[in-house]
Image (tube, rainbow, N blue to C red; front, side):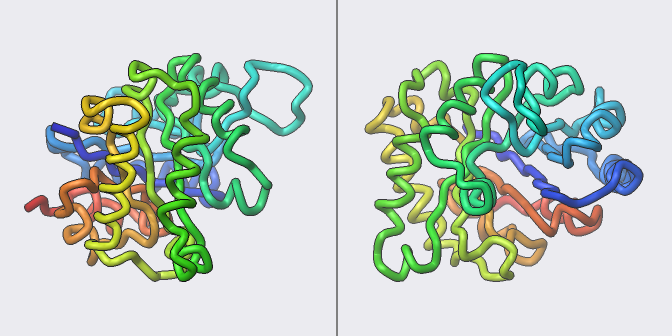
Length: 252
């Protein structure tokens, strides 16, 4: 049984003061059910403060990115050991905004995943197609290509520490959301690919999240799909009330 994961990606939002206020609000409302996990991914500047607040609580801490070296002359970058030191257990890698704005490609993301897993972090790998690619009938090809390349050379044992997040680029921050049935179709396709790349056990155990305008009013329908194992939530994770409603989605 795959335990659902609800992860909040705060992106470049929240000062340290704002981040701690948000987490305090979440802690008041999270009496975490045993059948799901909760993760917050603040900006780097707030990781230490948030990490101290959530220590020993039902909320886990994650980062939004890392560089695939432990140290060195990489101005502006952050490494796996640095993230571990402030209490991170997860890191988001391959987000479409990293791919689009900063030119990150699958091979580089693969290096990041290996670095994260090698250090003891769990990786959330983001994959997804653009509107143009979907309209051209290329969504499956694009997403499967990303999955293959980003997971290259990983072992079945490695995959126990990997979560995949399907985020159609056209639905991120736009208010548009894939219909639950369409999202389920892509999630099932990714799971089938995992069976091909690894085995049935890996495919059945790997959590595949949906990301792309997950909101309080659509989360129940999305989470009712058999291959959707949680959500990577953007804007709706920036307010305690809306994120708590998503965390406490009603399972069918």
